[in-house]
Image (cartoon, rainbow, N blue to C red):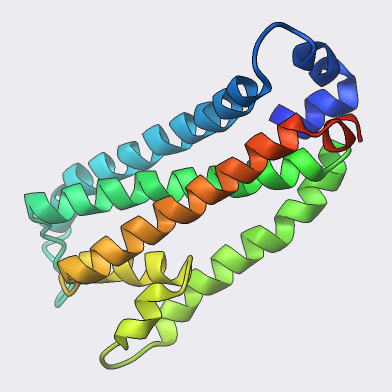
Length: 190
């Protein structure tokens, strides 16, 4: 939230916006920097899971029915989806930050978004039986379902594809809104 709202609050955003750089480039740079940090972090988690889970399972002598063996395809799906999720969440946080006047206000607005993501992820714990294909068209919830499906080795390529395309499309739309907001003096001077 500090990347935009913090700079607006400190007054450094105003000097950045009058520089000879296009506002679109500033907006894209901020969101992509945030996404890069989140995406790299996601890939590190995938690598740690791929390397660490089998080691942990062998050291503990197995945990009954818990068996985490991911194929190369599942690892690629997991990494790709986590990077797409990082893009979506980065654009969500940046968009909220663009419309906030201060970091405190931005953090206040971001908290419900965090709760939405958390509760949506927890909802997958309470689903039983076969998940309806319609559920894979619900934004954010579908990412939790696909992550669960990848780890449970039950996801189809259609479910993965729909989720990935929808996640990237929503992120791109939010990115477009952020770029438009950066062009608005009313929004950026607030």
